[in-house]
Image (cartoon, rainbow, N blue to C red):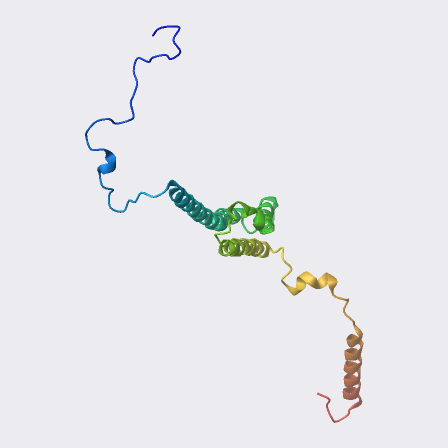
Length: 193
């Protein structure tokens, strides 16, 4: 290379233009199924395919999120089984956790499915499945409360809210018994039985 000239020559270079007399690639026919079209149509088709693929991916992920409460059922069931049926701190903590998780999940259904919103997909099915599975989880927590005896399901659980019993009937039965005894003692021939 010489200094002082405006253009610097390179030691090696690749020439992309083909000046040979051999047939060019444009003379070779296109393979079956391939068509040369404008780059705008190719770009729009590629963009449409990408959008469709993204919509399918979002729908698939939405269904995965909708089925996620199933993963918690086995874990929570095992923990409740290990806690036992006696009332103590550990069993109450596990039961409160079994109730709290579905309640929080039900409150945040919109936030959970926010990343998967798209005009091309319908999220009603995944949302309904998510809600149903969380309601099942809530039912399992309520069942555990019942097995611990913490739900007021018997009449004896409501005794404190009942009014005190009236004892006027006792006086009537004593009077009835007294009349009966007095009639038998008086020698009346008929019996009141």
